[in-house]
Length: 290
Ligand SMILES: [Zn+2]
Image 1 (tube, rainbow, N blue to C red):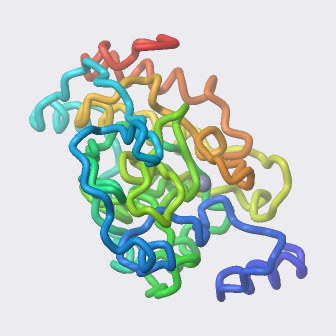
Image 2: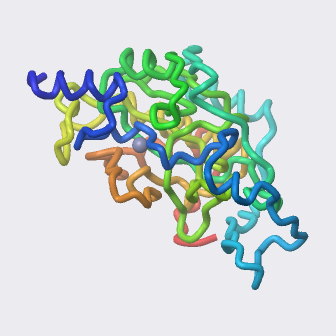
C-alpha cells in the first residue's frame, strides 16, 4: 500500500470530507435517511396528506415504484435445503452499530405508501480489507455522511459476514435509482433505492485498495458464495434476475464505480449451477424484461 493512500484512507475513515477519494461503499450526506430535522422540514413541517400514490398536479415529485415481478417467494424450508445443497459457508455475525442502518420505511416524505419489501440486489466492493470494513461499520457514526453499511460482506475465502438483517435498511447507496424507480423518505432527502435494496459487498483484492479503474478481481470462492447468496435472496423475496444490479449502475451521484473489475461471465456459471441444484429455474430467467 502506497504511503499517500494510507494517509488518504485514514483521513477518510476519520471523517475528512474534503478528500477527492471516496470509497465506493462510503455513504455521503445525500444518504436517504429519516429522523433529522432539515431546513426544508422546518419550513414545511406539515407534509401534505394525499391519498393518490402520485402527486399529480399538487407539485409533488412523481413517485415511481417497481412493478410486481410476478415471481412467488420460495418457502423457508426449501431455501434451507437449497443452502445446504450449495454447501454455502454459514453466515457469521458481524452486526453493524445501530447508527449505521435504519428501518425500511412504508411511507415516503409526503405520506404516500411505499412498497418497502426488498426488490433489488445491489453488488458492491469494499476497497479496504474485510476487517477494516467491519470495524468501520461497528463504530458509532452520529454524522450522516459517515453512516454506511451493507447487508452482507463476502470475504476473499467466500465466507459470508452478516452486517445488517435483511428486514432493515442498509445504507449502501445514497443518491440512486433503478431506471426511474427511486424513493424519497423525507422531503429534504434525495432519491435512493436503499429502502428496497439488499446490499452485498465483495472484499477487494490487495491490489484494489485504491481508486484505480480496476484490479486483479475477486476469487472463485467469492463468485460462488455470491451466486448462492443472490439465489437465496431471489427465492426469499421473489426477485427476478433483471433486478440484480451493481452500485455503479444504480448510482446517480456520478461518483461510484463498484464493484470494479466484476465479471458476470465468472458469476454466471456458479449461478446457473446453483439454480439447477436447488431446483429454482424460475429465477434463472436471463430475460431482458419481466
Ligand atoms: Zn458500493
